[in-house]
Amino acid sequence: MKSVIYITRKIPDALLRPYQDSFTFRMWDKENVPVPRDVLLREVAAADGVLCLITESIDREFLAAAQHLKIVANMAVGYDNIDVDAAREHGVVVTNTPDVLTETTADLTFALMMATARRIVEAADYIREGKWDYWAPYLLAGSDIHDKTIGIVGMGRIGEAVARRAKGFGMSILYHNRSRKNHAEQELGAFYSDFPELLQEADFVVSLVPLTEQTSEIFNQDAFKQMKSSAVFVNVSRGGTVDEQALYEALTSREIRAAGLDVFTNEPISPEHPLLGLDNVVCLPHIGSASAATRTSMIELCFDNLQAVMNGERVITPVN
Ligand code: NAP
Picture 1 (cartoon, helix red, strand yellow):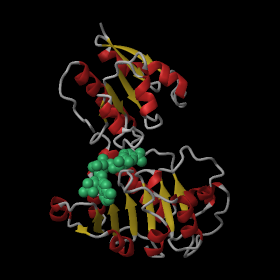
Picture 2 (picture 1 turned 180 degrees about the vertical axis):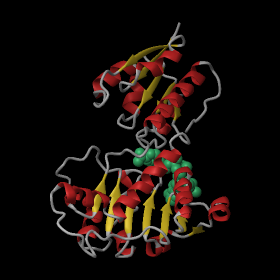
Picture 3 (picture 1 turned 120 degrees about the vertical axis):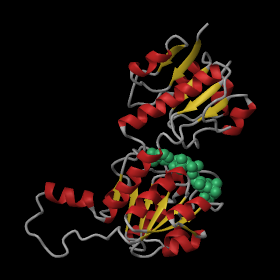
C-alpha cells in the first residue's frame, strides 16, 4: 500500500509526479492561504508523512491527532514552529531544508542591507509620488556599504554566505555565535566578538540566528541602545529575535539609523503595523528564500526526506 502524504499548501502538480508511484498525496488546495487547523488535525490522522510550512504549528495537539505519522518534513531551515522534543517522544522524525536555500537567503540579506542603507524603496516611491523636481547634493543620501563593518549574529550557513558577499564589498566582518568558527576566521578574515562588542562596533548588525529560548528578543532596548546611531539593523532570521516595540522606539528616537526586516513577530503584519509607517524601515513579507528555483529545491528536499523515511533509509536532513 502506498504511504499517505499530506501537503499543507498547494504546490505544483509537476513536483508531485516523480513520487506518485510511492505516495498517495492529499493536499490543501490553496496556495496563499494556510490550511485551517481543524482540517490539518483531521488530515494528519490518516497521514504517514506531512510536508508542512512554517505557518503550521506542529505541537502536542497535532502529534496527538496523528495515528501513524512517521515524519514531518518542514519546508524551511528554521523549525521554531515545531515542538521537536514532543515529536521525538512520539517517534516522529522532523526534517528541514538547510543548504539548498543558503545562497538565495544570503542574496536577499545583502539586498535588504543595500536597500535600507541606500534608501532604495524610499527613492523609488519618491519618483512614483511625483516628488522629483531637481537633482540636489544630499537628496536621498544614504550610507555606504563598502569598507564598513558588518556584525553577523548567527554565523552559520547563511551567515557565512553573507560574510562572503561582505568580503567582496571590502567590509570588515565581525560575528557572534556560541562557538567560534575557525574556518570563517581564516578564510573570510572574520573576527569573533562577544554580543555587546559586536553591537557597539558594527555599522550593519545582521541577525541570522535561529529563534530559540536563548535568542528570543535578544535585540531588545538594551541591544539597540548599544548600537551606533548610524547603525543599520537587518533581520532575516525570525521576528521573535526582536522586541519590535524597542526597535520602533530606537528608530523613532534615532538611536539607530534604519532597519531592514524580512521577518516579524506575528506574520503577516497588517498595513497599520507601526514599523511600516517609518521612512527609515524597509519591510519585506518573509521572502528570504523566495527564488522560484530555491523554493522548488526546498520542496524536492522535503520529498527526498519523506521517501527516505518511508523506505526505511537514512533521512537526509534530520533535525531530531
Ligand atoms: P545555521 O547554519 O544553523 O546557523 C545558525 C547559527 O546561529 C549557528 O552558527 C549557531 O552557532 C548560531 N547560534 C545558534 N544559537 C545561538 C545563540 N544562542 N547565540 C548566538 N549564536 C547562536 O542556520 P542557517 O541555515 O544559517 O539559518 C539561520 C536562520 O535563518 C534559520 O534558523 C531561520 O530562522 C532563518 N532563515 C530565514 C529565512 C527567511 O526567509 N527570512 C530563510 C532561511 C533561514 P552556535 O551553535 O555556535 O551558536
